[in-house]
Length: 504
Image (cartoon, rainbow, N blue to C red; front, side, top):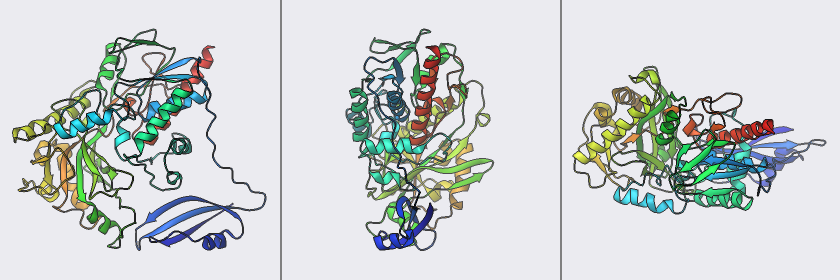
């Protein structure tokens, strides 16, 4: 096998004769494509070619089994970790019984619309809770920094099977888009049900008995020998339930900061050196800085996207970003956050960082309402340079955030350990015109990952405190993002199958 690369202008793809000339008569396969804007912006296409005696073996998904009548495994949560755990259980001959506190992916849209339009929070159906989890409405970014979690191809190929573009198999930074994900999520559910699995919506878990009987808020009970917990990063009630059962929990580091919104044309100009043209992908950015011993980094960057309210309870303001598949909106947004470790926050106990998180979210709400904000989800906001200089902004630029903004001293509202590091980091970002008063900071970006970890055995992945329960995904504190959560769900499903085999 040999590898080769073809570099093209942004205006065209490689021509067949170019590829065949590089392949030298060998069979070839496109493996990856990316935009390289370090100098003159170009497309880079990477190929593999196979000579005589060499065979390219395309990736094949495992076989899905009919599990009608098979042993059940309860899966709590229908986000990425829960869905991919359920799909893996099908390949292992086990029947997933999925309990989701929220609504199906289409019905939850009505509650999200109420949240944005009127500021009405349904604590069980919002941008975090419901079928597909938080990832279903946040652009659908599919890259992860770690390849040690498992085979990324299993996740990407399954997404293609259920409706995603094949482009995600070759793009360096694959994404699906918030407009495409709901159909994929629904296709996964229909497939699981057709193979014998079950979905139960509006089924918020209230207790898990010592015999692993799971009781839900609608009065129903479910029984299995194994329970997978895939409840997401915001399910405080699940942590409290586990603590009430005598289960161990740990405070876990997370990150907090602001959503930063620029006009997309400014990001395009910066990243493409003034050479962006219609038809070229909207530009992305990422950065990491070390400030006073803590990482400050961009997170969940949404080119051509919009900002949305991500609160899961009343009297709090939390923001997130999303973008559709075309990424054609006028604004670019990203979380810019500061890493916070348990030792940074005074106090004891596993909930101290979650309490810290909640207080900041409540402070944002209280300030916005004290200024006469019309919408309960209105966000405190400040222009970037004003924030760094400690000045209240006299006016607000246009924003994609539908509930609206109020001018606020975010440099005072944010905890000093966050605000002071952000003030130092923004001027350091190595992008022309990134540090500008045309950029708007909105508070608060606080749901980057769970501030609580459910400790599990590193080998068996079983909850250390309560046998038969298998925590996974963001809510357990072992992943961050769609792909890493999906991989963790897959790994836990394999561990569950192995544990059941050992019993039989």
